[in-house]
Amino acid sequence: MPELWEGCFIGDKGDMLAALRACPRLMGDLRRVGWDELRALPLSSEHTTLASKAFYHSHTYAEAFLESLGGIELVHSPGGNASTKPRRLAFSLDDDLESHLGVADYYVMQLLGQTTPFPVATVEDFIVFVDHTAQKNLLLEREFRSCYRSENPFKLIEYIFYGTTDPAVTAVPLCAADVPPEFRRRFA
Image (tube, rainbow, N blue to C red; front, side, top):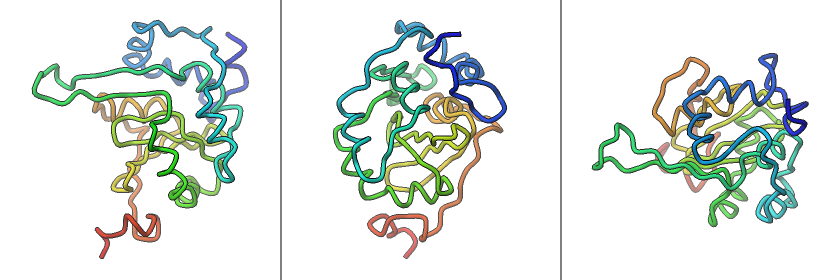
C-alpha cells in the first residue's frame, strides 16, 4: 500500500483506500481522469491559507485526502439526460467557500461533535468535511438546509454526486440552534 495512505483509518473498517474501494463507481471515475493510489501532490495554497485560520486546523487525514485527490474535478449528468443539470465534484475549495466557512465554523464543529473538521471537497451546494479521527464525516449544504453523516467520506460524495442511496449515509435533522443566524429564516 502506498505510504501516503498509511495511517489514515476510517473507524475499524480499514484505511482510506479501502473506503474508496467501497465506492467502485467513484473510484472508476477518478481512475478515468488519471487518478491512482500513488498520486501525491503538494498541498495547494488555498489549503495552507484555510489551515492557518483560527478554527480550521488541518490534520493528517485531511492532508492525505487532499494530497491524493486535490485539484481533481468530475462532472456527472444524472440519468444521462441532457436536460438535467450536470453535477460538479471538486476536491478543492471554491473562491467564496472560505468566507462562508468563517461564518459557519462553530456550527460545523457542533454537528460533528466537537471534533476537528476540515473541508476537502465540494459537490454542487454541498461541502464535505472530514474530522481528525477519520470516523466522523459530514456533508453539509452551504445554507444549512440539509446535512448528512457517514464514517466513509466517499459514501457522502456518492450520495450527492450520483444520487445513490446507502445505509451508511445518515440524514442529520437540523434545528434552529444548529444553524448560523443568517440561515435561520426557515425556522421562523
